[in-house]
Length: 395
Image 1: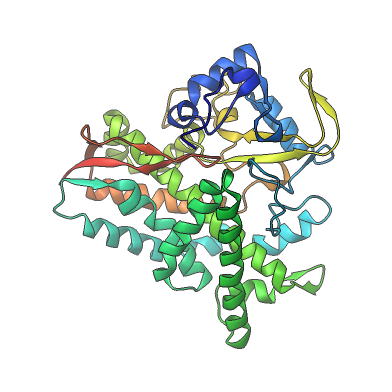
Image 2: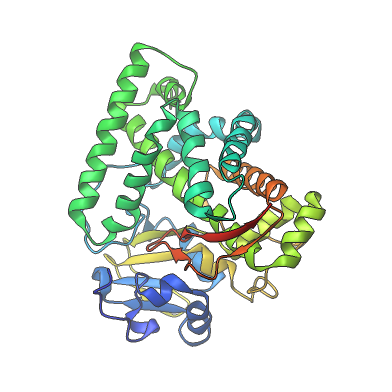
């Protein structure tokens, strides 16, 4: 990706893989809202980028003109195995989503909080006595990958393999189709084996739940179960570790917020919502399937849309002081978990992991800051978060 020609004009040649976009996209989005709220590029075989909340919302709710069959903007349009319900359009979407919802209610997610807390405390114990750490690699990235493994009933030792697949699918695979297809094949094979094992030896985990689930009174096919499991792994890990890392990145620099949260733990709920708004990790994609016009822009069939919920969350027309983090913000109908029929089913899980991860971190390290001797490295692609987060720790 480093050899890509730089974007010449964000409104007519934007590139979300450009290092300037990766490092600090917020000024770019501010510029676009004022000069060209719906940008277009010929890169990626044609893609649009709406930067205002109202336009992002309009597209997210419009399933007639915009399809979810491709949810990542890539250099190629290689056909990938479906991952329902995120890659499903109506009418198939609703029953596929309803099959998953019972496993992600607040009550069901609450059952996983003790294990999540144990994981966080175990990771923090490893940092005891250290004055420096990489909070992304040694903490944020470990939590959701191990929680998902716990929920799926697969070995937590497989976490390293999960992280590899996530990097290959969501970063390297945007431009390298061979890497993407190999990772997809490996994931399909991995979960095919796990599903077969669970059919032979039933268990009370997410794999067992999906095997017994019904869509319109019919059991799910192995292909459907496999797609859902791949979705849960990819969507349930990278998004949450990115959010945890971004929260720690913010608190490392903002002592007033950090100290207030340590002093007033009752604010953690509103703080998590505000940090999700300000540093929403997920940008999805849609494919234009029928020509339509939104805010004076004509969307042409066959082109993609980079549907940026993070940009929508920074729109000052909807959020006063949109670029300022206000940890006790009262009105906060953010779009971090998406809008429309594809709003994230894992929102309760992500909120729980964020709340527990930040609470446990602040209890162990109420004082910490960025390490000035080492750079922060951000992910490239459509899920944004620190991949390296060097911190200085005070016991």
